[in-house]
Length: 184
Image (cartoon, rainbow, N blue to C red):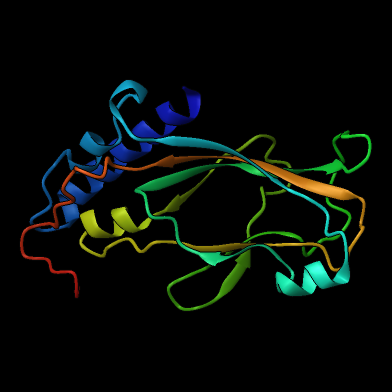
């Protein structure tokens, strides 16, 4: 419920901003799609990325635990990944390999490693999905992202994260702001 409540607050803030700056945007569009859990199609997923068993397995996946992709929903709430000892299951203070983790590509094509700011404590990340790109009339673009795996097999750790995918029902129509087109 907490992640959904934060997502609803974010949706309300985005709705307010869009109403002010996006001509033809119907106030409340996003909030009406990010409803209470009983009335929505949101999915919560615990994601665990396991250690590569061999170099062949790592090569086959091109070193990616999750290859580059965009989420199809409106928003995705992410609890930042944690790293666990593969044998004991105990939480590690940090990932032994600094380059491992979540990466995003921005509109200019630049790729950034996404991690909590130093000293931030607990935090949440949100990504924009393809449905949000539609209802925003292209003002927001879906976030292309991937999860880079370890530099070799049998490194002795795994990564776990939690994601909540805020997505409309398949039967819900995603309306563009008046005057917008899918080519905008």
